[in-house]
Length: 375
Image (tube, rainbow, N blue to C red; front, side, top):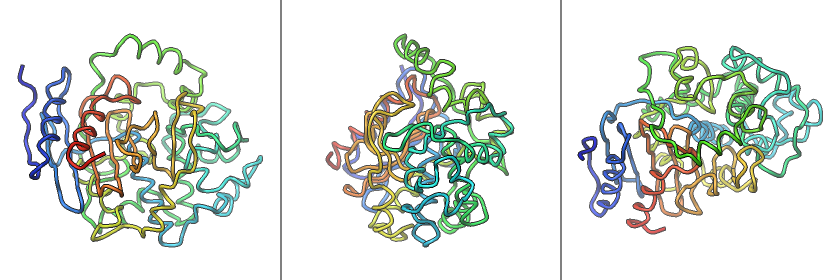
């Protein structure tokens, strides 16, 4: 059976990746996707299938965290933010209730234990950002630093408030003013202006084991449920919630960045040392992607690892190489870079995976890349 039409080009030697992308597009339920790869500073792959094209913009869910982490690295490179300094230096109220020694690096690597406030908050407070940030600043440490606890939504609220305390503006303004406008990238936090992004659709087939695991680990009251819903404030499925106008116009750096495939790959390419217009120095990049925490995640229930906002290779984050960094999203989006191999990659599908922590499309693509440039 014919799948979605494939358009675009690959450089000589990259045919295995085109074949892998084509195989993905022939999988049942696939509506379209984009794949863009930059290798050693040159475009190696620029492919689109089905309803996806070069100008298609879509919400990238938690792959937003990688975009936000790049913004924070830029601020660090400019000397405006120090990863090793206590958050309370920039945000004094954060230091209450035993949090005065939590560093920026610990906050950004999901060690602050602030996955949701102890008191219920409303969806309006989550979307506004500031009320949720105030509530989180008033929290006590749920867990001591030293193990990751994935802050699915609140990571972005905390990062945004940190940026506001440092610059007086919001994280999305840093993205626009310091990264996207100078380099002509189509990425934003939400869509305050312009047409809505292309929707991402739920998986059509969810295996029984995945449904059972979700029922157990994401039932109301569990850490995963608290982190994903901010203790029940978000009561719709992710693919439904992100389509709401109030979500699209909100400032949620952990969840609602909007990007084209090409721009997301170019952003990661500009973090690599050989980039002609590198966003940050090699020293800053090493600090941003240095492993800050690893181990069994208190929220996800499996091993995860983080730098300063970037996900690092682990059981939770399959990035194809021990030297890669980036971030996937629940919708199937993936953005990453690998300094050792000179690789930057973005994959944006229009259909969600059945299991966000084990998207077979990522494995297929990353294995094909390894055939071309090595593991």
